Image (tube, rainbow, N blue to C red; front, side):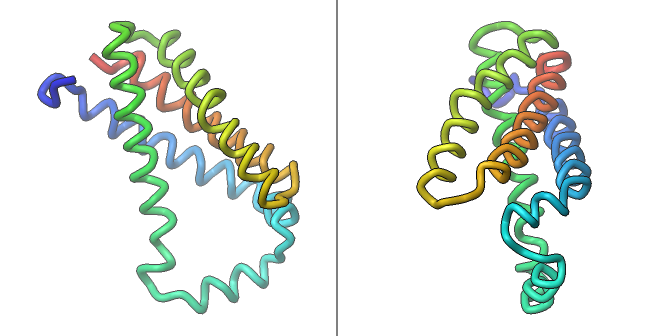
Length: 142
């Protein structure tokens, strides 16, 4: 895939949209997510207070970088399939999520002893991210 032919704006818009979705999604589910982690809001606030400025924002920056990489990869898949449309973007996003993200999360969660509800909450969030990125790039990618 030649970099000159990539619609970088579609990848950037898709990544930002997915990043905003994840912020809203995890904020809305913060109580059950924290409960599944076995933490309280007070514990999280104390952990945040102990971090330096860069350490506080690092997860948010990493999430955006991750969304950009997901967008670039989904763009590459759709480019090689020559199927830039909304339906193909959604299907490709869902297949990548199911085949790579959900399976990896499930295995890691099982071995680390995480509560299943945490995997469900995180997995649904990642599904939303992959569908949003796939939809935007599929519909607007070329």
